[in-house]
Image (tube, rainbow, N blue to C red; front, side, top):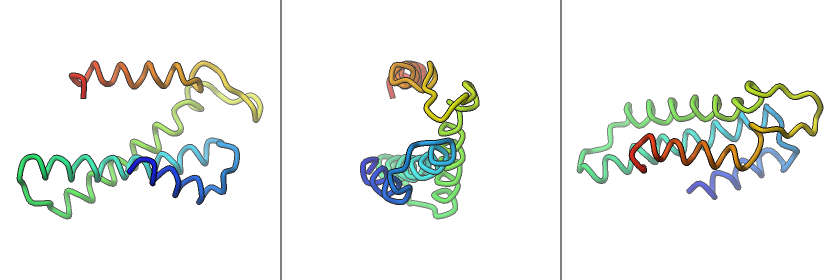
Length: 108
């Protein structure tokens, strides 16, 4: 599902260089997909019926968190030129963040 969201966003963004606007847009779609997917998985595992209002709330909150996450590297590390890539834009920082979230949430 994440790959499909990436392809849709990449096509929609016309594969331009990733800037803050594109990061936020991609975060919106990925966050919404994660929120909706997480709620659907929860309902399936617990046997609860899907409530459309809660589905929309999870999708909306996921979209907002995705937008914030997409803008976070530029908030923490201001761009000084179009090709800036520092500590908060690195794969190692992303890996550390994902690892710390996994450990903090009990290994997801």
